[in-house]
Image: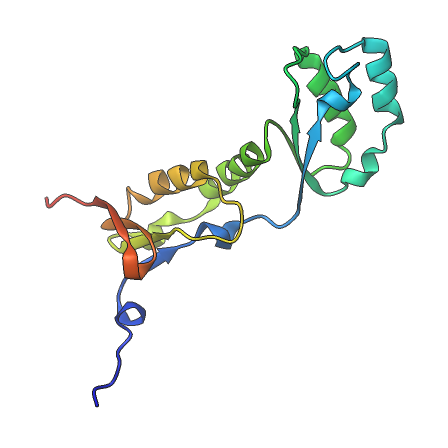
Length: 169
């Protein structure tokens, strides 16, 4: 009987997995509407008092996404004021959804990666992930990889989708 050979394990294909760079930490979304009258109206005096009485220490070492779940029109200073309360505790604060938060984290960490290790190599960007890696992170990754990689695919080695191949010079 012929021996089964794992061609993927023996290939020169490099796997780039965004999950490997996923920052550890708790993600929390804070809804500003909780401090608005009926979820829509910001009354400055009440708003400031509510923020002053809120337990901000519960967000120690959290990554925070600030947003408003209602269609309220809120002044820009309101998110800035909330952020001043979060700064002593949170690792990072962004305005937006949890997906915006994840994208922001990757925007900060991808420039720190040495992509030159993929110089002239075929690369596959691993597609399936157990963690919430946003599409924006994949877009950022391919922009960083393309100047170095000979070719780029997406997915798994057994069923990869070709995305880029360096042109013959």
